Image 1 (tube, helix red, strand yellow):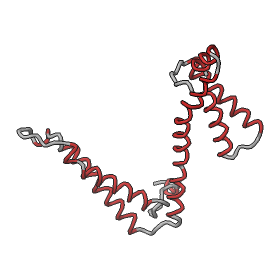
Image 2: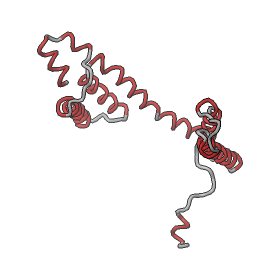
Image 3: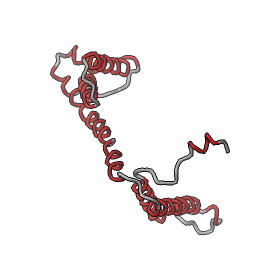
Image 4: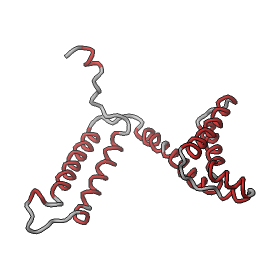
Length: 178
């Protein structure tokens, strides 16, 4: 084996967060395996390998065995430093899921255009952008997204409750295009 490929091989020490991930994976496989009796069936008179429960059971038992081995390897090997910090870093990424869920809740209230502008600016600020040119481009991007999706692609997004305060013709235009 060439010497350069030996240098790029990963070490046998676990990565940060390895034990946590192994624990989650093992718990998930055990949960799925515990549900096999209620989610699949064993049919009388059907050949063994044709049973509806057989192949899912084989897959789940295999997953559980390998998850158990992975967990044991992670626990017995030299623990990586900062395991808790790594898990906290993973959990921080869930913040953006909450941003998206808030956006989905706000769109029917404020409308697509206003919600998109608010969230694009908020996320730009959240990620650390403060320059006027970047914030201007964020606004242009938000308007372009709305125009492309509602105007050109005719994506059906419900009009916001806020649109009800506008006069009829303006309200209809905003519901259809903004």
